[in-house]
Image 1 (spheres, one colour):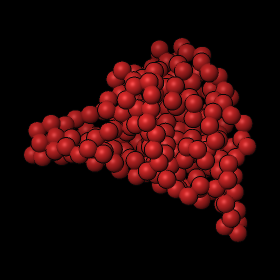
Image 2: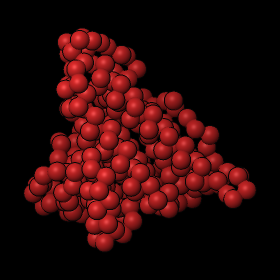
Image 3: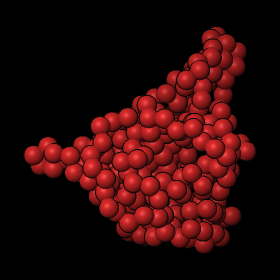
Length: 241
């Protein structure tokens, strides 16, 4: 876990926060939109396609964008700022799984199918970074995989890209720490946090993950930033890595 500055006294709770769900058309995206919107957050649910079910939810606005296209992401930032102003959270949800076939099965097609998830993570967090470090409680969370800690031949490409996503998220955590330093380099109140939530599979854990994400605004950034939590059911196992 990165070196942490002092705790912030920022207000707690997700109510009133503005949160971007980047790639919200999945079952997890739908559940997050429902839980966060229901808790009083302003949710911007973004995907390539229309999401009428999400658009009908309280507190949720749907937007269409290709999150792997830098120009489209730049336009998205402008749309979000025009609609609701700066954001307090980015939750990159672009995902998917392909694997099998051992090492020979790790073909370029498999890589090309999985790589957009990392691209979307990189582009969205970079594009909204100034908002996140300006917020009194900026948060980034990704859903990763337990395969990162247990490499297997048949999921080599998938696991490698998840590992890259975890590394990127750890770098964001360091960025939050740097942003909290004063002009003379002293540690000040940490306001932002980037976290990794590992699961074996998302299916069946949507409710647990949604609750865990919503609770990120209940805890001080210093308790969260740079953490990796493995979720196996209703009781997560947290560890700083």
